[in-house]
Length: 98
Image 1: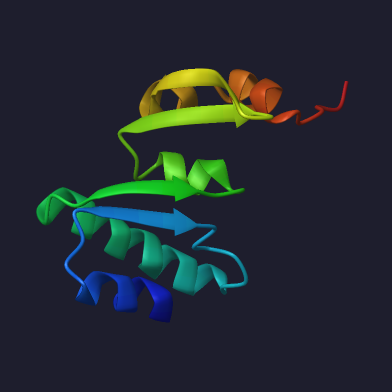
Image 2: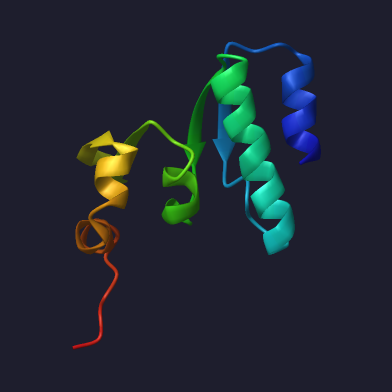
């Protein structure tokens, strides 16, 4: 969270976040995601977020892209991907129990 605050002090036009939720307690993750959503919606700041917990990030995103070894395998709206959990699992290589 400190790194996010330090980045915002510089008044950027684009925010790059690499795993912002890593190592944070769930309640802190919720607060951080609310803050990111508010900043991007109300302040008009664009953000590129790389995160291993896609469901949390998709909920606050407009667009989504999934890369596999540097190749874009999905590009579209975040809500479309969020509404298709099977496709998301397939894209991320998540195995489902039979």
